[in-house]
Image (cartoon, rainbow, N blue to C red; front, side, top):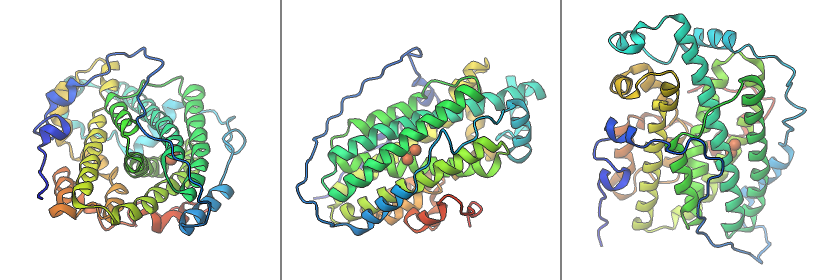
Length: 376
Ligand SMILES: [Fe+2]
Ligand SMILES: [Fe+2]
């Protein structure tokens, strides 16, 4: 039986990856929402087999128990953050993430230093807010994994991740509230992705969506910000979160490797499609619609230029530096006539395929170790 190739239309709701109208048509219609309800369609599974069946997962569980830290006492919250100074200093390394000349004929072409600084500050708030909302997604997904994964060793490990994620939500929420005077609502593309992950009834899809895709992207994004910010509290906060995050991604890779090795081509195709849809959703959110709205600038006017802007492209591609090698390790790139490989080629991120996968580098992220420069 041959497996039918779904069109982009069916998978991501548009034929062209860069169809700006379609991307921007999805907006948050309920900005004041406080509670958001998603149907969790999965079975809760007990296991009566308490034997040690998966030593690698148990090893990770032991590592998690000794790798705990306390967001209240291990971080120095008395550090004052001068956000203007921070953004000015950080942008000496980072730039604004945009090649300004390209926007000469748009509204922001007339911007001076003051406006660019405001953009930098709002961008930082927005970015950390999306980290925060993603962390809550991880908290919910991991508690779901405790219930749905049929393996004893994985339930034990996942329970430690629940505590880790609670700590991450705690520290990002506190940083935004105390140091940045508040944040942003969840970006619609991110929320739709989290909804999809939680909605799916298959337990391995929670892992794929969260541990491989969302957390893979987070690990790369945290690493980038950690390497480039001079703000000591944020730097340490990110370093601590990364030590947990690397374990989480490794947990996903170790668990899924076993499952995927035994799956049929048709089942793998579903996973490849899911990985692709998740990648596109994460890419779409990088237009930062909510930031432009707040600054009174039309995203529609800027989007065609932003999508071609090499500085933005570079940053956006870097976010896939962990996802692509981990997908390769799982065998997802090349099954079904290299389906996912072709999609990642179209997205311009395949060049990361031979970077280190996270099961190989998890120990390097332990607290106290010096992180390798990105890409080495
Ligand atoms: Fe996290
Ligand atoms: Fe995590």
